[in-house]
Amino acid sequence: VFPRRGRTLHEAENIGEAMDPTTGFAAALASTVFFGSFGVPIKSQAIVQAQVDPVVFQCYKTAACFCSSWLALLFVDFKFTWWGVVGAAIWVGNGTVAIIAVQKAGLSIAQALWSGLSIFVGFLWGAYVFQEPVRDLPMALFALLLMACGMAGTAYAVTMKGGDSLCDDGAKGHQKLLDPDGDEVKYRTKENNKMVGLMCATYVGFANGSFMTPLKYANKEVKGLEYLVSFGMGAAISTVFLYWVYYAFRTATGRPMPPWHWDVAAKPALLTGLLWSAGNASSILAIQHLGLAVGWPLVQCQLIVSTVWGIVYYKEVTGAAAVGVFVTSALVVLAGVVVLGTHGM
Image (cartoon, rainbow, N blue to C red; front, side):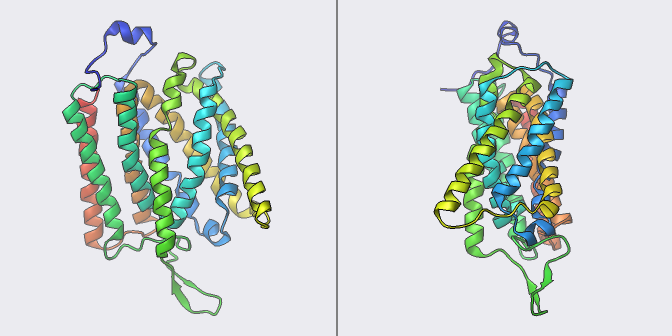
C-alpha cells in the first residue's frame, strides 16, 4: 500500500540507475524556467488578434519539437521505443488542450491549476505505481501540500482586486484597445470562456501528471535523452493524425479549415515548441536523477515563472495586495521544494 522507503545499491545497479541529485536539481530548475515560459507566445497580441486555431498552433509546436529532438543524438546514440510514441500522443492532445486553457482562462490561472494537479498525480505514479523510494513519506506529503497551497495562493492573487486576468483579447500593454468604432474597450475573460478554460486546465493537470509515465516504462529500452528521438517521431505521427481527424470533423460540420497564419503564427508557435522541448529534455534529466515522485513535482514550480510573466509582462496581477499575496505564495512553494528535496529522496 505504501511506497518503499529505500532501495539497495544492488537494485539501483540492476536497473541501470546513476542518480546524481545535483544534476537532477539543476535540470529541474532549467525545466522550470523553460516550461514556465513556453506559454508566453501563446498570449502574444499578434496571436490573439489573429485568433490562431489551437490545432494550427500545435502543428507549429510539433514541428519545432520534432526537429529539436534530433539534437539529442549529439549526446546519445539513436534508439527507438514505442513508449516514446505513446508519450508523444499524450503530449499532442494535452498540448492542444493547454493552448485552449491559456487562451480562455489566462496564463497564470491555467498553469496554476494544471501544475497543482500535476504535482499530486506525478507523485502518486512515482511513489505508489512505480514504487520509487521515499525517505520520509509524511514529510514528502507535507511538502506536496505546501507546494499546492502556494500554487493556489498564486492563482488567488490573479483573481484579487487589481488583477486583470486578461484572456483572449488581452496582451502586454494593451489592456485597453480601440474597437472598430474608435471607442476604448477593456477586454476581460467572459465567464463561459473562463469555465471552458478551467475545465481544459483540469484535464491538462491530470494528463500532465501522467505524461512521464511512458518514460518510466521505456527505461528498459532507453535511458534519459535517448527517449527524445522516439518522442519527436511520435509527436509528428500523432499531430498528423490529429490534423486529419480535425479536418474530417470540420468537413462533416460544413466548416473550412482554419488558415495557417504563417506570417503571424510561425515564429511565436515555433518558439513555444522550442521552449517546451528544452523544458521536456531538462525534465527527463530531472526524473532520471531524482525519480518521478520527486523530479516531476519540482518541475511543476514552473508556475512561479509563468505567474511572474503574468505580472510583469501581461499585467495579469496589479496592486500591492495582489502582488504581496503572490510573493508570499511563491515563498511557500519554494519552502515545499526545499522540504521535498531534503525528505523526498
